[in-house]
Length: 336
Length: 181
Image (tube, rainbow over all chains, first blue to last red; front, side, top):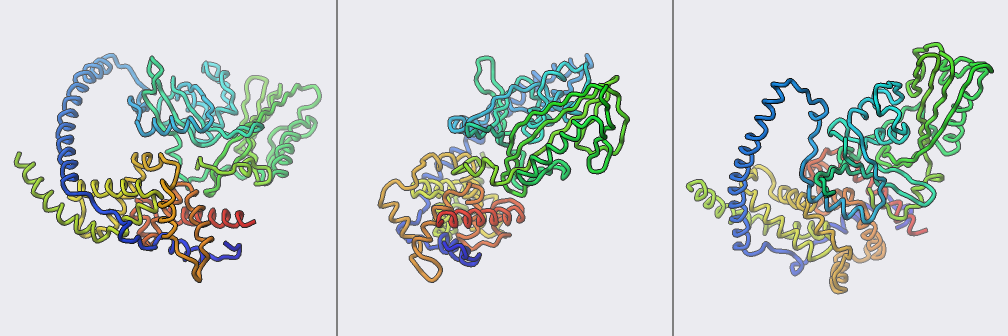
């Protein structure tokens, strides 16, 4: 097709292609009525059987569940996380089959998950210093943040403790990129899958994950420079850090200890229907000094003050361009 | 028992009606199945499954609706449901070279719009499209359905149909443009 072909030509060609009449000898015809009748009769029987089976199952479930519920209500036990656990006890055969087929073709990152409670806490405050929480120091904040950022952990719908997340990754040897395709899998004692949920089902194609304009740096060069700019601002101890005109940290001086750390990971998100790989860099700056509270600090910078110490934490998202994107190397993207 | 006798009578009556309807839109339904499956045998299976489901659920059909749109929707849903996996199991598009030739015979010859080679290139590109885009594209063009009708058949918002169509065309333009380079 010529490059200058217009929409009209494409429309006309598609119309011709799909609407060409099928010759009589290639048309299909409904099979003999008997076959259909038999199928329908069978299905009628199946429905009757199903009703009886369902009734028996409901009665049995009631007999088991009612005493348990009654005892729970008597003892006044609260089930907080379990209320959210609607994870099916039986694996959907179609999904299971898809998962098995997919797992043969694509690589996964296998991530054992902790309780939904942790992810809820994390989403509220990713840099929590709550020492009462046994999990606070356990997780790498970047990877946990990334999983939540991509909506891969369905912590609001399911209890995730003891379950495993299989996240599809694209790997070109140099770079591993998380995708939004993931399965949440639970297994029985023998290791057989007894529950499976495709977490990406909740992400609609048109859903945009809006990154705040403050932490997106468009273009490869801008991305690198933008992030370096923020990091270098923090590294300059003798001058105050201002971002978007707001004072974030005052000068710390030579006598105050300050440490900075960065780490990076890659992921894919959809922006306006386009699959966009991007890099996230986690940046953490710890100052051994209690800094002044400032209410108009940009939202993407979290500040935690504890005792005589202040931590500044942020995730910087680098919006990739086609030139620096791994995507250009994918010959045929069958994931989406 | 009375319930089943009544149902049975209703079914036999329905069966006569639905056969007539299916026959009437048989050509377009065949075309839809062929376009979705890209394989004669699978398309035939899809056609039969669609008919079976249509007969089964005919009692739920609202006479005010257009029958063809109703059955097209069943066809697409059947294709999209678990059965789709079966239709996709064979990676090969054509079982025999005869089937291949027969299929390509359906592609219009060179005309004022485009050359045969361009059609072939377009078909190959369309076949490579992700499922969700291809389904929308097929439905939109196989029977000249409007975007609104396509949305109704697919049971999705019109905006989604529009965006998928645009995206599909964008991919096609990109792919065919790239192939030429």
